[in-house]
Length: 538
Image (cartoon, rainbow, N blue to C red; front, top):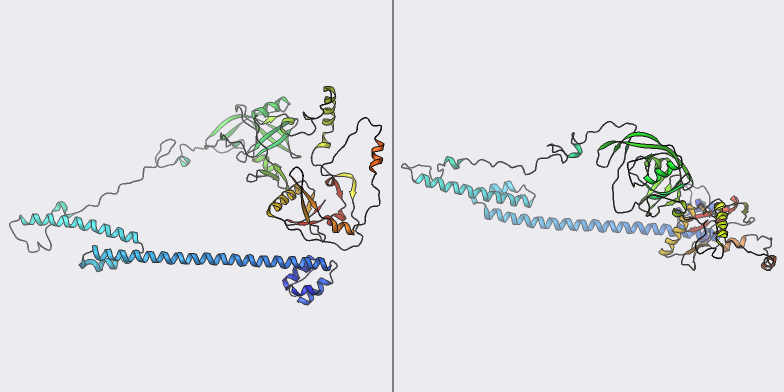
């Protein structure tokens, strides 16, 4: 219990809650210690390790907050220095502009201009004022000299001629030049009507009221391949189609449309209003049929549209199908998932050279067909029989599926308290590999997140083929597990039983441990800890 003395009150509160105890913030430190020691889940080594993790996490969070505070202070300091430098430059510019006023403005009106222009806070405006003043003064000097020449030719003197010379009417009034409109007249790009852009022109954007038979379809031709390609099945037809969030309706491509009609699908003729990508609308004759689309083990009934006049178009899954199936498209990571099963990832497929449709065997890899390098010693008739046998029981070879119902794994630890080992350190590269393995197991529904008093560390073991195997260090769990007394079969007995066999078949189960259920009461014992959380096998 002495190791609890180094912990703060908030650390003890977190520790007590991790042990399953209900605590409040008004408890004293001594009460929290007694509550932890009296907990049914108390085990000294486990609690000590858990406390170290709590303190370490608190320390890291404090250092992170300190670092963020230092970064914010540095940013504010740099902003202040920048503003001071900016004010310094502005002050120098204003001093220079003030010297220009003294140099360029006559003494008798200098004070007036200094008083008026001192209100300006912009050096550019002040410079413009000075330039305008020079231009006006030059014109006035020209007009004055012209008037004086005319006055000298007169026969009678004028008293105020020197100060107020008579001005020539031609130059007495300086009409302001008319401002020319620099901007061009706004006209519609479509019809040339002035005062409108094409998007708001009443002549080009006359749209009829949408009816129940209208759809919106945005299409374009591009050299790049579509991104969101998914494999689907409609009856006996398999295809690779494009999930298009720009189409409100699902559209069957030319090849899909012809194949469905050959399969006996009844298409009904109807006329719909199509809204194209340029905003225009057109009436088009189409065909519709209700079909059931199978994707990733889920069947979705949807009304599919077909455009008989469209040649070479590919099949599109519009927003009506995406909403009904609950598929969420993630273009950044090039995959999708069902909204109710976020861990079940649907990876996008590569584009094919053909137009949207092929046989199932040429689109989806099928492990139920013999490869060219398999069964080379068989005659053609035997190869046909073998292929037929594989296709007949193809469900056995498909990936995924439920675990076997004929066995269940038990972990008998009697009444021994839970054991836990902290996670091992990992490099950033190992963490990334582990993250991918965890996501794959979650997607296959092999593991699930949990809160367990048990915990085993994760070990990544490299395979000969360069891949990585996820292993769990269950040595502490094995030490407290009561072993089974059922004897394993002897290898020599197994070999002896096959002495009269003509053919010997072997089978290697892929991830065999994942094909046996763990008894629900023992699932927490399989928990393992890693940087991404605590998980257990199902």
